[in-house]
Image (cartoon, rainbow, N blue to C red; front, side, top):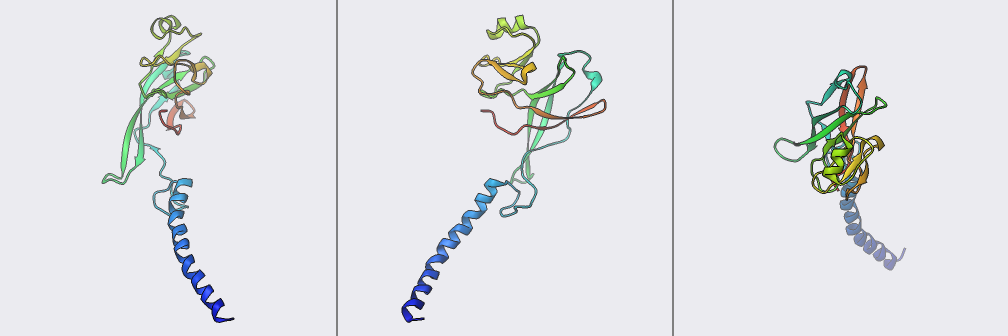
Length: 189
């Protein structure tokens, strides 16, 4: 190998060090973007996604004697934060409803349009008066901007400016017991 070739190899190596260092520094945020975890470069660690905080709402089948029985509840969701408490707990209002086919569904009461708290409206005539839309059955209706969600169709937006249905809660049924486990991921808008 000649002196010129040796010098080129050394210069290429010296020039590659900053490039390799930059790529290494960019790897941690990129990996954290792909899989959020508690610590940087902890790819196999526990995720820092929101979790249910105690007390978890619990119900019994006997709480729902008829179709369209609707019960409001509060769900506590824990977010990992880098503060002295190491968490932030947010309260999310929800409705749990028994459908005519005996299915039980639960939704966040936070309107996906601008974050108002919506209501359960059982009477279609009441909905027509207050929300300018007459549905076929009970619905969720937002008093702020008059979005209406059809519960029988999975929370489908049937009127108003809301961009999508409200977020659903995951439910666990164990015999006669019903437990709210988690909230569907997402944000208000």
